[in-house]
Length: 191
Image 1 (cartoon, rainbow, N blue to C red):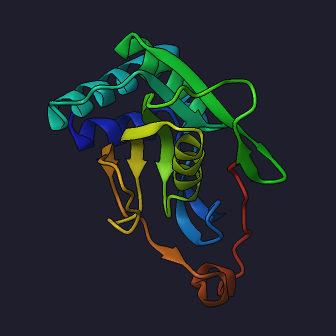
Image 2: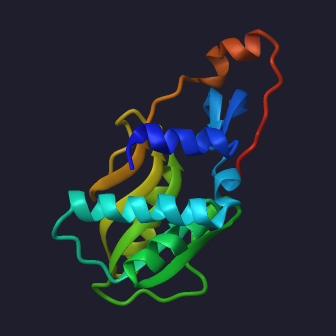
């Protein structure tokens, strides 16, 4: 699946929004990827996550993993579908007071992980997940995401594979022309 096909699925499902948005990173943007709209369609989710798994396997030929882990909320469906495609276990970390925690699951010493996520702008949730895996004795072998909107700025100590590389325009809140124009600021994502 090429980038144009992925972007077309986001547009067709209404998952690519245009307007004035505050991203989880705190930045403002004229575009927002609301993956929940795309993931409303289980077959579309299966198609995209299957394509992500194929890309992970193609780019990381020696990929050996035991488990997929995802940050809640956005990564849960993606992580589950990626794990299903790989035929391995799936777990997730969840938020409390805007910080991720490992609650319901255990990580075995040396267990190898793929982190699955929907969209990365700065990579804060992915880095939190990496820190949790490593603090519990696990190893992050790879990171698989649907949309990398960081423009190469998000980097980690594990290979990053994404289906769509895009860098929509972002603004610091103090220097946002959309705010200056008086456009309503929308917070469509999870906080």
